[in-house]
Image (cartoon, rainbow, N blue to C red; front, side, top):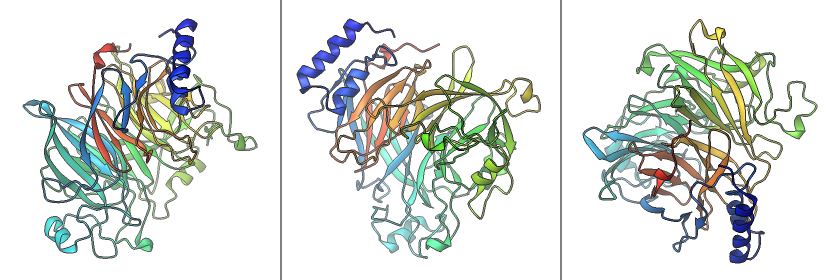
Length: 484
């Protein structure tokens, strides 16, 4: 959207008058929403929330669906640290959605678990369906909860624990067959008091009415998993890793819709740039594997098989980089999009990338023969879509989602410690233009995570991890037409 200089100055002046100048990050973000160079303004400026929780554009509103500590309908307590999340259709009930929600907990800190520390309650409820016990007692605190939400009534109809005994379930991804891939963002082992190794992906059916069997999908690798996205056409699963020298992974399943049957784990390699270091850090200037990457620059890619993917030593990414895999800085959110013309795209966030260490957004366009022997006839292409140079424009991009109109929805996850730090939900058009959708106005300034749209596109669900809210945002989403 092209914005005139007059439009930009009028909005900037109005913000300065209303809020006493441009010193505050909240005001800077609003001016950026109509930045004529890189910004867009599809929904207009944010309006202050009288309740002090969520600032949204005019005509938008939110509802709190769940809070950390709420009693669920299965009698357990809503655990703390809600993170990645996906919304699924309810068969025969268009006005309802299933929400499957991660909890980024690992029993190592002050956390609220589902059992309120009650061993008897845990044993009674979980039985043998906990993947692991911490110090041979309570189930490890991580896992998932599932909510059944009625859009017409604006109420939670049912809520329950759906995966137990896993650790630091950070993000994940929805599958086209109606399940949630819950990812462990940790490599903890017996050395930290756990009974088993962690760092795996677990599958949770959205329709499960109780705890699922906690089966680690070992062929998908043991590493610091963050998120996953499934290409609905090819069935290939793309995965990210939250690590300073992260790889970008893909998994080729042996059987469609049956991940327990195993498959092949691979890492992305940039052609003619082996062991590429892509993060654009000034500190990497003397590294022979580092090159500057410009916004809009593209690279041809290939994929490399990985060995010993259960990685007892936790060195999967290091071994991959030694053999030529590209490295990114803290890969977090990943999302799959299919354009009206059939073009498939996978976006992923490198949260610590860029010279200011505050974030990059990458796009991978798969080969028309992705995952087959003919792939190198038309290799996949990697492009740096966006890189933030200013905290007020975007800081610490994390979880990603695709909006019904085709834009990328970006959750900010900043814990910079700066007194003016604020987390936002941003939008990015396919052309790389950024706008602001929401601001966390809560005094704890927690990260946004788990953004996802309801199957009918009417509602944007999102979590604020601390102190722990799950929100439903509604409004005139129809103002945006699908992007080409």
